[in-house]
Length: 161
Image (cartoon, rainbow, N blue to C red):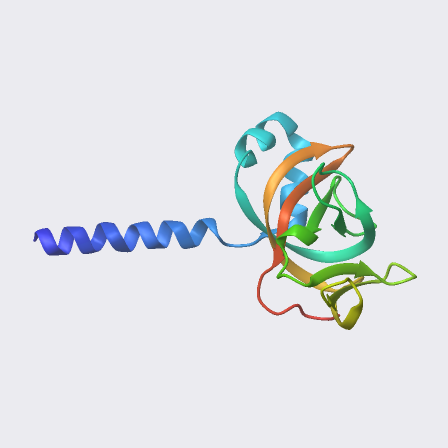
């Protein structure tokens, strides 16, 4: 009986952890902040969350954070319920000799590889506007109408629309 109880407790713990990692649709979290900003901030403060949604815009050099330059990827649509989800991808979170860059028309984030002195040695597409993505990041703050996630990373393979 003890073995069964411990197994059941372990299974429930794993199940609970998996449930917390389930992606939240960006509209759901935006609605939470629209309905009760204080309650939503309390709920997400200090938590890693996973959000899915369409990329509506991309901006390079977002300085929401004070440490490293970031690329901001905004999850929203024109008919969205309220706040956008701003996902900050920071160069400091990448592998050595890689950095993020935004193309000239701000429609795509590229991952560039660089040599020891900073010369580009290659690049590959990372995120594009219109793409449906799932992002995991640390809730930072609700700022200027944006739900800001920091230290973001893509979850699974991104799917182009």
